[in-house]
Image 1 (tube, rainbow, N blue to C red):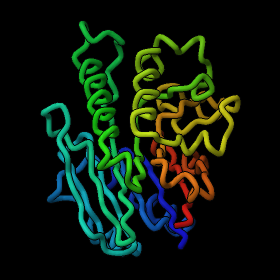
Image 2 (image 1 turned 90 degrees about the vertical axis):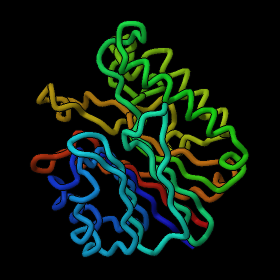
Image 3 (image 1 turned 90 degrees about the horizontal axis):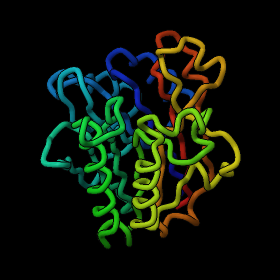
Length: 265
């Protein structure tokens, strides 16, 4: 059985509905995880998305900020919304599919602009969130199961996950501390970094090109903030991985692009 899972920080689901339609028509993911939906549950465009062929549309959101959603072609066995750091800011949603596979969708805090937890509460929150994720991933209920973890983790952990490692290593999202926490997360859960499973670490791999510098995409000043991780029992099922860069050149695009994994289960 082949299964296609995609993850995409859409940076407002309502503003990006036409992009979602174009993407799902072209790539037809069985499961699509969205981050930064930026809409409260009562206003989520559920019917619009169901018209794209998704039977199960699950979402966990709030007004204007954060928010996650999982869209599935077939109904799910169960779903869960989890609170992290004792702060329910809509950053995690999971589903269990009929084949027993768990898909966990995360939107990790960005961490602000100052990489010092003493001076920056947002950075402290991010560090705590990643530490809690690491503890969670080490639990046999996750580690020993068929689990795919996807989302915007807001860290580019490897040297070639950013366009200029030397210039950026003191910036939030690529500091040694954050990179270490992502390494700890992978180790704790025995997780395979799907992107780097298919693309060697000495090659550039990006999923985000910021808005602030207008030529960022044209000059390929990218970061790999979006990730797909798989538990050990799924490693042999990994068939293909792709980053859909074209979406960054669409009209009024998200600054992130989709990542896709194909599994043979």
